[in-house]
Length: 386
Figure 1: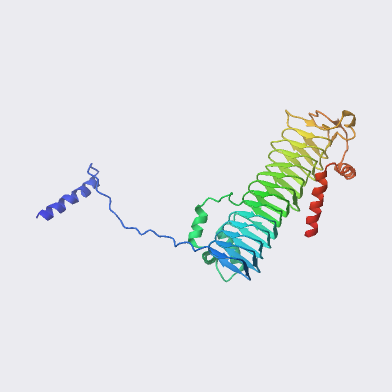
Figure 2: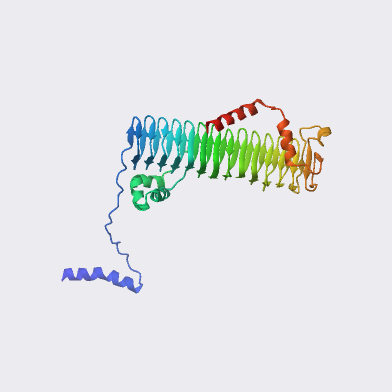
């Protein structure tokens, strides 16, 4: 009977709780759950050097010498090479660090690239690649295997979990290079920092800043942050950046920025030239066949030519000939557009000047600075090497 009475008392709180009356809370019921533990990450692959037709590892790899892969190199984790890297295709889902030079056809990196030498990529260089994106790309090349199955082959689950949670030292998607960088197309989710020149067919996207000794792009160039060049900035197509600064000349098909456009030399655009919130300032001249617009000042040491139209901020002005005596304004420090702009603060208004006239005068100009000669010589050597 005692046992039955005890059982009845224990059942009362639960029954009373259904009526909504205040009762003493019952202890929570404990349920046993099994934690799913990820398998331990594989030990890093290490070798004195690596020379194979093909190589793949789902974890990290550290090679103490040069790496030469005839076809495909696939590393699921971080790859550290104390030497040079030569391969056809490289897939590194983590960070790629190479103390020497890199020479590949295509380079796909999940996190950051750090190179101690030169980087030469024939086709596409892409950083910030997601593992699923790499798996889909490889699945497109190999129709016999699905992307989901390939992902299991590419990276160990423990390494994949580390990629998704760990902070990337040096910045996610960044490129750092102590030499020059040449590539067909560049798609970088972070910033690009080069000690020497950038030579690219097209800069598809740079999510951060770009800084180099010189920049030469044969197509379009799209930089979300500041673009800085220690000498010339030369883009055949459209150039977009948050801000432009060159310690040489700026040349592009068209130029559009959020902030300032500043050049120690001249600024030349085949089409539109605009700064939505900043100023346009050239140490020498500014010229475009299209419209010229700046939200603030337009400043040039010599002439300013905009064949279609020229507009500055309503509370600012246009300065031309700022490095010339006033007696030379009409010949060298002039301002010319389809109609006379407002707020001309210095320089002489001259009608019907064309961009080609500035180009002709530029060809006749003798080199004024030693660094201009050295810059052109370095650029010619790179072109001959290609």
